[in-house]
Length: 81
Image (cartoon, rainbow, N blue to C red):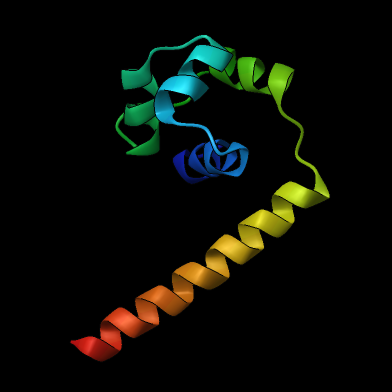
């Protein structure tokens, strides 16, 4: 698992970093550092995620929509420059 997937799981749930940290049993700074790529995701953290979340079709649809919106946003920003 990478930092992007970790962040997308949190965004999909609609949780703040603090709420997500509380749910999976880590600190808010840990969530922040993982999302920024400044800390690796340990097997223990992955196990904590697995207890609370499933990678459903709904999640993958969310990821596809997120990526599509991000691409549109990036395209608009590059056109403005």
